[in-house]
Length: 136
Image (cartoon, rainbow, N blue to C red; front, side, top):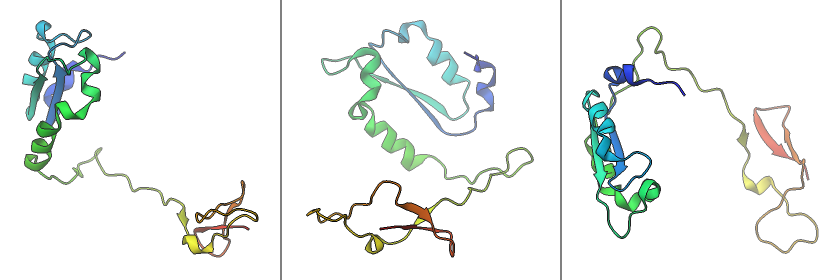
C-alpha cells in the first residue's frame, strides 16, 4: 500500500474525515488522523462519539452518525469548477449507450406482468442511430 501522506498539503478540496471514537482499527488515541488532517488546507475531522449505537470501525457504515456533518459540508463547501491547468484537463466522457423508450419493448409471450420483459440477448445496436433497440 502506497503512503501518500507526503501529499496532504496539495489537497485543495474541502475534506471531511470521519472516524469513530471507539474505532479499534484506527484508534483516535494515536493522533495520526488528527495530525494528518491539520495538513489539509480545507480539512476537518469529525469524531463520532462512542455510544451504545456505535460499532467501532463499522460505525462509519451508518450515515445516521454523521449525516448532519455531511449535510453542512455540502451546503458550505465552495462550488469550484475543475481546474483546466496543464495536466489537470477534464477528460470528456465517452458517449454511453442510450436506450429507446420502454414503449418499444414488448412482453414475452405467456407473461402476465405489467413490466415488459426482454429475452436474453435481445439488446442490439440499431444500425441507423446510436441508440440501442430491443429485438422481440
